[in-house]
Image (tube, rainbow, N blue to C red; front, side, top):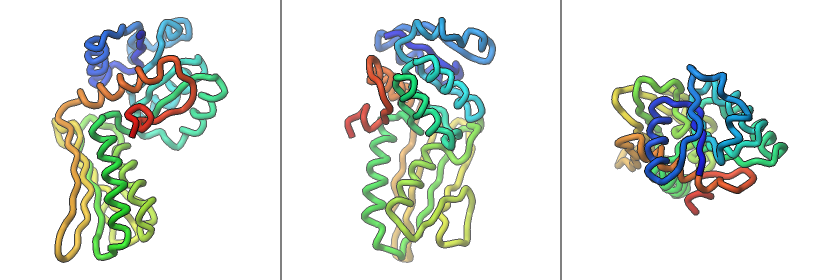
Length: 238
């Protein structure tokens, strides 16, 4: 399969390594130094594009890819207020799109565990809930997209929490997400339920970026030849 990499930082390089190991070809690598090569002619060589940049460039990048009709996997976070526009562009241009706040197979299983735990805990109001996410100091957005996904899953199940906030809060209706930036953390996410008698805590800790990279390549393999909007649940059959 021919893959275009939009963003060639640490994640882009990790994705390249995994893709080559799995027998794929990288036909295009776009970064800030060669943005002029981000053209339809160059993208036509790719079966799928994988976009990992940052919150300030991701939307424009993905919008161009949709307009070019390129099947796209996007792992950039911090721009989801505009995702419906991208979904509409995907349908209009008859292409395919997968966005995930986290492509790790383990994290996507963790999402399912989080939903189940939140469902079990919704009747137990003695437990306070707090989320913590820890990443390296180069991560530009806070809270992480993964933490937001976890928080929204909790909010869907526990009605006494109305919204999430990225700070300590005295408001019992607010769900706290605490963000820490510590090198060289690849990514840790904790969901903790605390009462006067005990704590229940689930934790996912990434040791390297390889898990995220593998998931992104699996998503690209899934998209080849497809049209429509998909999720990692589709890729992993969860």
